[in-house]
Image 1 (tube, helix red, strand yellow):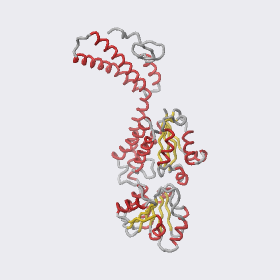
Image 2 (image 1 turned 180 degrees about the vertical axis):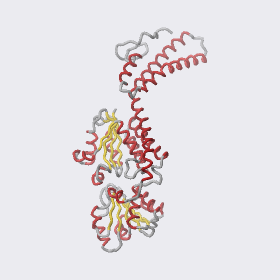
Image 3 (image 1 turned 45 degrees about the vertical axis):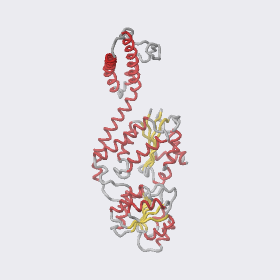
Image 4 (image 1 turned 90 degrees about the vertical axis):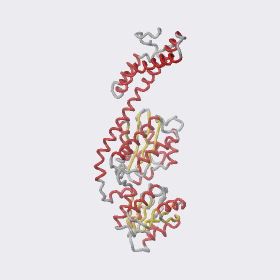
Amino acid sequence: MQILCLGLNHRTAPLSLRERLVFNEDAIRAALSRLGGGDGIGAIAEMVILSTCNRIEIYAASSRESFTELSALLSDAHGIAVNDLQPYLYRHAGAEAVRHLFNVAAGLDSLVLGEPQILGQVTRALELARGVGAAGGLLSRLFQAAIHAGKRARTETTISRNPSSVASLAASAAEKAIGNLENARALVLGAGEMAELTIEALRKRGVEKIRIINRTLARANRLAQRWSAESAAIESLIKSLAEADILIASTGASHTLVSAEMVRSVMAERQRPLVLIDIAVPRDIEAACGEVTGVRLYDLDNLNAALETSLAERAAEVPKVEAILAEETEKFLDFLNSLEMLPLITDMRKQAEIIRRAELDKTLRRLPDLTESERTRIEALTMALVKKLLDNPTKRLRAEASSPHAPEYAAVARTLFGLECESRIYGFSGNSCSIPSAIDYSSP
């Protein structure tokens, strides 16, 4: 089974395309539910979709290295021709796909190096896939290993020390554009996790006057109560915008909420500048708003470039993180390699157990006067003998799992242990060979 990753991110695709491809949780469930019955899509047996502001990635366990089904799924889900997507997509397979996901989980592939939110998003992606039965043993193990690697990176290095996120970048951009924020009036559009992170970042920079607007007023009220802020209904957006110095938008709306016409009418009645920061995908603020006199507009694509904050301290931690990820990747790849040998090792143990039980029963029938304690000791002896006899062969097979000659080792082992044989006495079925005659199982 091959691990595949098809995706695009902030490095390969512009925001205008990314916002058209974003999956909300319902869309993820709908796409993954096609695998929920375990029937697969073509060669695909398992699938996980990771969709964030800056990346859309589909991970799959497939019987062949082909990205055709994944490209078609992404195309069909959003009504965009595959040919239009091709220039922006990256494709990883096998060990390369594993390394990529580990880098993502550790924050090395994020817009903001080491940002903390991605680890939770990777975890949520796995939860959604499991919820509809799309993530089986292989991808579950992969994502669990990536989450573990991401946690190690954050606890054993300072890659996420004093966490920086898109929300904190937005607050920094506002501070750079306006200067001291203590007297600034901030308007936050949205009441989700990103909105809360934005409010936290604004508070850290001294902003006292914050108003929260959301389509669901009750959510805005709850968030405002937690942060001692104001809240207002979406109908008061224009009035609130006229009073604000900064607007940071982060809703999950499928269309823009702040139009250029709206901003022009606001700016016609005021002299002071207005900073608009759009960290939503799809965008909440119409791009033409940036052309209005007195308005400075930032979005996800120009936000990082607009800031001159140094990430040198975090960048210095990258080699340490990479060492951790290399170690964790090697462990997972060893696990993958061992999967090739697991059926063989399982068959060896099953065969040995069946033989052990058959010979033990035969012996105990010939010794009817044994006490229960003596019977228990004899059974423990047979179990210990089997374990010791199989210990070295199984260790050797696991060690050779990553060898290019692993198939030959497996074939020889099956022949030596007679695992392709048919033995009516011990309950095996297979091809017409015999249990090695060097061992006589017929006598006690």
